[in-house]
Length: 211
Image 1 (spheres, rainbow, N blue to C red):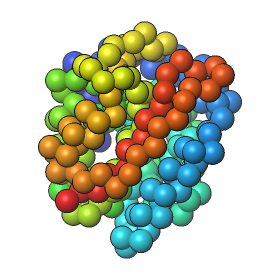
Image 2: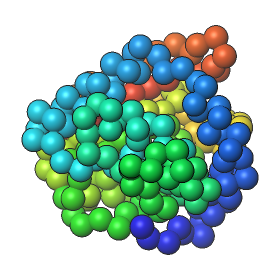
Image 3: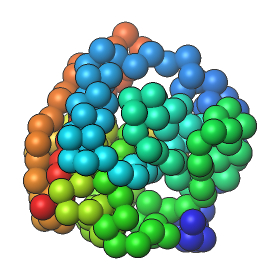
Image 4: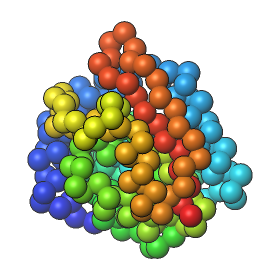
């Protein structure tokens, strides 16, 4: 994939520094039944539209990439952190993982049938997020699907919070859906769930289709 831009180096370095601990945390964290249902719905939408290549953007240690594979998708992972990519390759040697930035993908226009951004745009500054959605739209084929998971906040501006690895933002779900709509995405559905016992914030999920 393309070289990581300098402005994202701090986030990449922060994840590099905690890669092993973060991978252990992700593997131990349960996926709620509601989130499993959203992932299954995304996979079904991609397959119903004819299938094709899917990118797990911000794949971390590769666990979500493997789950998407197990749902029958042809998937590969991309992450800013080269340490995360090394861990993912070691854990899942049958899958493809590449280092790169979500806003500058080394992919042809319309190359993908689907994109999953599983809590990975949370580190993007609000003024930059429109560019990410534009890049997602560029690499998705018409009718391609996007699943975005994020932390929710109530109505109002995006809210920065003290993520344990790097600064991150919570979004009102309506605002994030509107931003995606401006980039050419139509909403299929959404799911919000309350935080679990060891979680601080509501979780939001948007299932979108490129117009």
